Length: 78
Image (cartoon, rainbow, N blue to C red; front, side):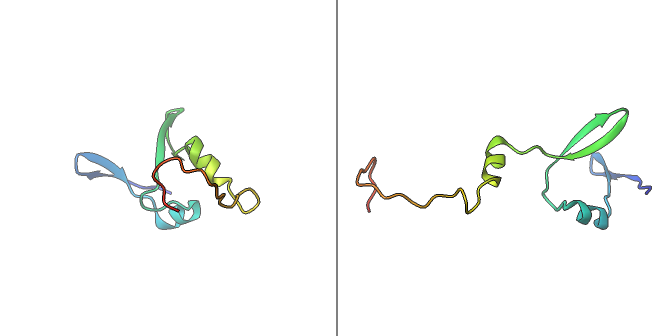
């Protein structure tokens, strides 16, 4: 597929067709990393932080319920 580079304010932009975005599950606000590799421009999904990766692993098998204690640490009102 051939696309053209167009002026967008003080930058240049390339429009990515909707069907390609949909097939890659890319949406408005999706963060991408731009990499130059072998004289080519490569768009990659932004790497997730360690916390994001850990949170993604939470499911019903490893999610514990709330624990009630008789110890107040701060100004909690139960």
